[in-house]
Length: 222
Image 1 (spheres, rainbow, N blue to C red):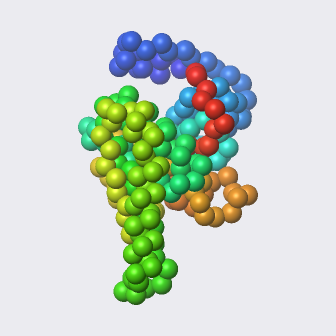
Image 2 (image 1 turned 90 degrees about the vertical axis):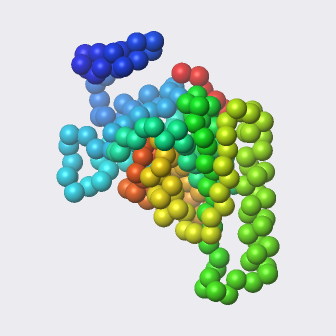
């Protein structure tokens, strides 16, 4: 713990650093901390578990149940000055957008807002109705972004509606980002699950640090 604290202070002497050694199961302790934290940051794997697993059990438990956003770091990337956020209009997605705008503003980074969707049926059979649906999706993306762009006028925003499954689209976009931000759940899937299928997949396939953001009733200062 002393070594970890010294490393942070050396890299960022302006930061206040507090260390602690609480007793208890790691996941339970971190989940309790998340009730009062702005963000929990974890490595993808700890010292235990199976080497073949891409994500440790503690990280998976914390991401699925934390009250605050959780950043999971498996690949550390810097220098892109770009944050990617997935958007689909859900409450979880709106929370992710808020977090992503805040991070882009703090870092002076470009924000790339990606909304991916797929047409039902074969791509060759795109109809006028499907074209209209795609236009509505582009308009919806602009509506989701508009109020946050007003709150953060200094953030450069790139809108990217994509006709593709969201998992490969986000994974590819993460290759050129310093942070990928997703909601803990999207519009689809089963409500009883702690994580949606897209956020769960990104824990494995993101090529940069991943922030998983739950919806929160109100902002909490930490």
